[in-house]
Image (cartoon, rainbow, N blue to C red; front, top):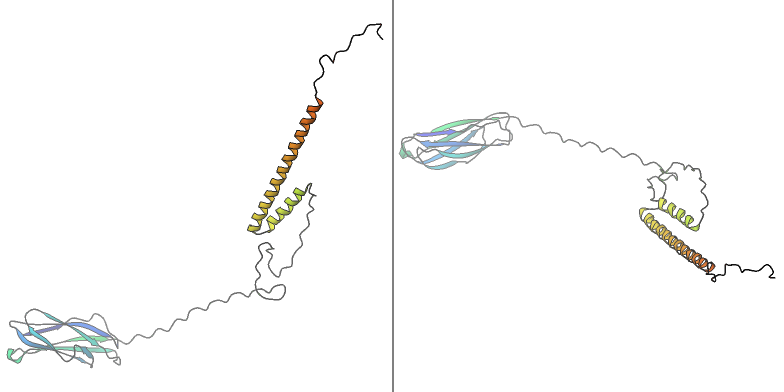
Length: 241
């Protein structure tokens, strides 16, 4: 006696899908020799394996065959019935057995329209400069940060005191260059100012040293030792002329 069964299909299929299931066969009481498996589907559908599939000798141990059913692309929603039939050699006098499995076919899902990406917002128009030409003019490192197209406003002039020495004049100009220049120019100007100040300090030290030396020399000349007894006045008599 032959036995055949199939595993269920979990979900509905769509036209063009491939559905996989398993056919399990075995024999009862005796060995079935030269057994074969034949698959068919209604409506007609392609199956794998196709034709008469040789199972060999069947015993009481289950033999599993993997079966693939391809749902026709033109099939309308409905039911596709798969029939699995197993038979043995005529000498065994085992009656053929068959089983069916129903596959539910649903309508193909509608194609999702392509999503159009949102348009990129346009950048705001660049304001026209004072000369009528478009474009943005970046401020120079040492220039003004006033936007293009805006009239310049003259700032009140601040009267600066007259420098008392050439060193003060150089220091003022160097300080202005440091304020208006780039970082590299500021560093170079700072080095120059520092060198100038160091030179003036050295010159002042030399002048003070010379003046101090002269003062010491003049003091040494003015203070001379007097002759012993020279500060005493000579005695004169009353009648000495």
